[in-house]
Length: 359
Image (cartoon, rainbow, N blue to C red; front, side):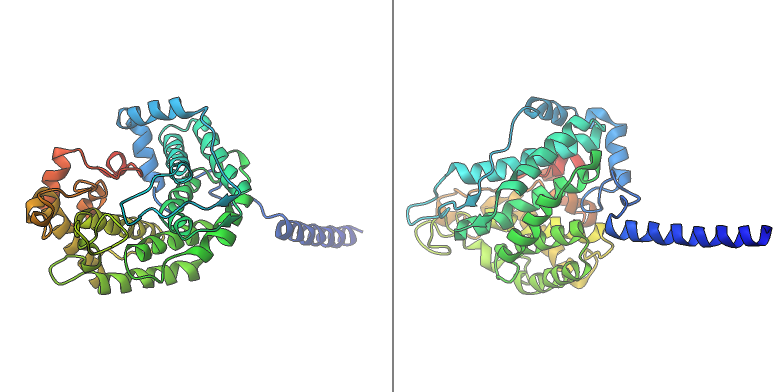
C-alpha cells in the first residue's frame, strides 16, 4: 500500500509540475530582477551610489517634486512642421511637448532611481503610458526625425521604472515596435543615422532583442569609420548652416560645432547602452575614432576661434558648449581640454543629466 501511495504521489507531483509549466508559459512570472533597472543606462551599483549621496541629486529631486502634478500632452497623430526653412527655424508646441514630456519622464525615473520614492516612478510611468496609449501615427518627415531624436529618452526612463508596482508597459512596447522602429533613421549618413542607432539600440535593449542590438552596434562601427576624418572632424556636420541650405548660404558653418556635438552625443549614448549590454565599443578601432572626434570637439569647444567657420560668421557660432556628454567620454578617453571645460561648467544639452550621473 505504501508503495502504491508513493507512486500516486509522484504521479500527482508530475501532473502539478506540468500544469504549473503550462500556466507559466501562458502567464510568465515576473523576471527575477522585476522592479530593478534594466541594464540600459544605470547599473545597480550606479543607483546605489546615487542613493548613498542624496546631496548629489538634491536639485534634481526638487525639480521632480515641482513636476509631480504635471501631466503629459500626447497626441494621436504626430505631424510637426519642418524645423528648418529658407529663413531659419520654426518652433511649434507639438515638438516642444514631445521632447519635454520625454525629458520629464526621464527626470522622474532618475529621481526614483536616486531616492526609491515610488511617486516619481508613477509619474514617469504615467507619461510613458500616456504616449503609448495615444500615439499611433507619425505623418511628417520632421515627426519621424523627432522620434529618432527624442524617443530614446523615453526608453531610458522606462528602463528605470519598468518593474515598479507591476506597471503594464504593453502600450509603450507597442509604440516602440509598431510606431518607432519603422521610422528609424539608422540607414542615413549624417547625424540622423547616429540618432537612429541610439533609437534602435535602446529599443533592442528594452525589449530584449539581441539581433536588433547586434545590427545597431554594427552600424555604430560603420558610422565611426565613415563619419570621422583623420583630424577628428566630422565633415558632414562642420559645414552646417542655420537654414534649409544645410551646408551653404550666408551662414555656412554657424551650426557646425553644434551639430558636431549633436552627432557625438547620441554616439556616446549608444556606446553606453552597448557597454551596459555587454557589447562594448569603446576600445574598438572605431571607438578610437570616437576618441579622436571627442578630442577635436573639445579643442573647438574650449577655443571656438579655432573652428574653421568662426571668422566666416563674424565670431558667432551656435551651440558651442552643448557638451554635457563630455562627462561620460572623459571617463573613457581622458583629455586635458575636456577636463578644463568640465571644471568650468556651463555645458549644455544636458537633458539626460550627464553631469549629475557621470561626473
